[in-house]
Image (cartoon, rainbow, N blue to C red; front, side):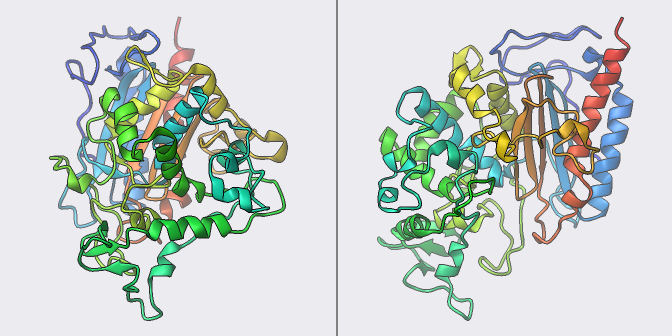
Length: 447
């Protein structure tokens, strides 16, 4: 099933050209940009790795976990493995390519609003331990929300509702759109394009904010995942910075980092890269979703949101994950302070059996005591590691202890989100584990 191009010497990849002698790891200065290297440079058994990864991905494709996928591994700033497998769809027409663009789904949370929030904390414009209502004024009037802190929110410790299906507010009982919210053609009041032929009322986002502001809060302070405030964060970032959220992220992070395809609304940007499709939507868009955000809530916000909406290639993802791994420093430029990044990536409420960092996902507590089937992610990852998964079948993870970045991209929701074998077969963690075992084996054979 594999249709792949292994990254070899001579690849120009965002940083300086790197010559690596066989069996000699290239140790980059802290804060450098990513380079290309080979598995041989780390004395890895490449035949074993290829065989194992191929087997897992092929099993996934045969069991309809996804029609195709990508795997990227970076070690100490060196990309040593980047492979593409399968096809965009099960008709086997369009092979997966290394520069394909993916809908990242909830991975958006840590690569969209989170870097901005960290920067604003650095600048003293946000305080993690002040009530969020200090910055989001409508919550001052809500007794159950007035004292909730940004730290509690980002650690999913605030007791907020997990998700609200705002699409229901736009549909009649017969499934057709309510014309007061959705139109098929744009005009001055309906210019927010959610999809081809679907235009949302310009003020609909205010209705979404009001519903979030009035949503219930649990009395119990315990781990409860919620993406609601990630719908609010872009507006908050705009209010604080004076720039539209999308423009701020492009100016402060994506463009200076050299992320060539990363951002929102890829269909509007004339990329030559292919965009991998997601779901054949039978409820909302009634067609294949491709180049438009899969998540309905992000779609109703015009595709620019904090909970979903980002698209990008594996190469672009590797850049920003390496920035996180290098404590906010990349290619000699500091984007986020080391102290702030360490604060955001550490477990916040372990006493409440909450594994989460601030925005970042973390391994299960005592993860190294579990077998692969019960662990999250692989049991070998460092306790300081962090990342996030996405509903569409994406996964990113950075491990400071082992200096590893792991990226898995797929469109597991094609043709339907009911496909859950990516979870049932534990594919992403199993592939991740292969590399930890390979590095462990290589270390044992070092003189």
